[in-house]
View (cartoon, helix red, strand yellow):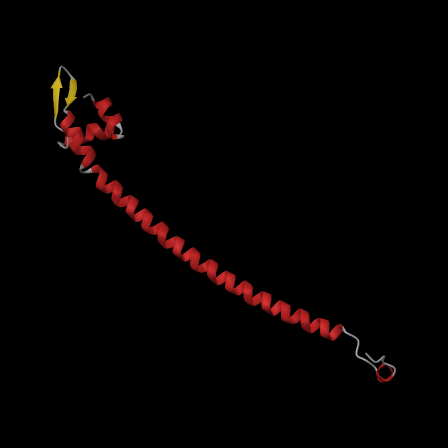
Length: 116
């Protein structure tokens, strides 16, 4: 495989692949200035060293998102409870206002009140 094919296969840049070649991470055959990289090495790279780091990153991200999700669920519960308390207080105050706004019967109206 050529460097360009390896780049596409692993999803890495050409400079990364060339750096891996210089460091010895990938062994190549140089045929008249063209690098040839074996299919077996590419398979080893794609399954071994690169995937666990990506999986570790994904696992950390999933863990962080779950933690944030739990926090938000708890916060929603707290806000719903606060809203219920507020609704109860508003209802109580509304009833008190209604009672205060009703006219108090005067002594004269009590005397001439129609019997039920």
